[in-house]
Image (tube, rainbow, N blue to C red):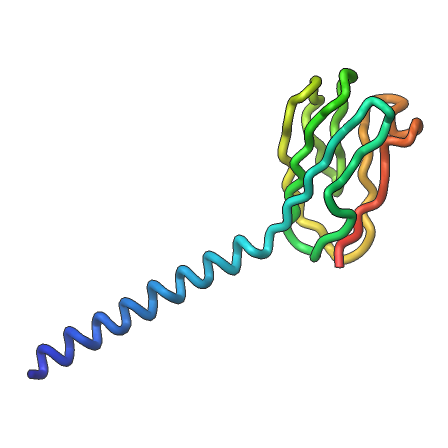
Length: 119
């Protein structure tokens, strides 16, 4: 009888541990925000959202233009993207405003820039 109780206790602890790990993993993935970014030849970026909670943010950048473009924010940038190429840039943002831009010479000056807010 003691052995049966011990086995039941081990299973209960194991089940609790598994549920806690699954819950923790789920909460971690919820902390990352994804923002879709489209680069266009009219020297504009279109973002799916202009703000997000502070922390990890992934910017999925698609170049819909025929000129090469990149996307820079928080001291990091994507590679130069050709027409229809996609790159993902993941950064950790603190609360506040963060400037983004295309670093191709002349593109930011032509309007390919903006501000992203982290709350």
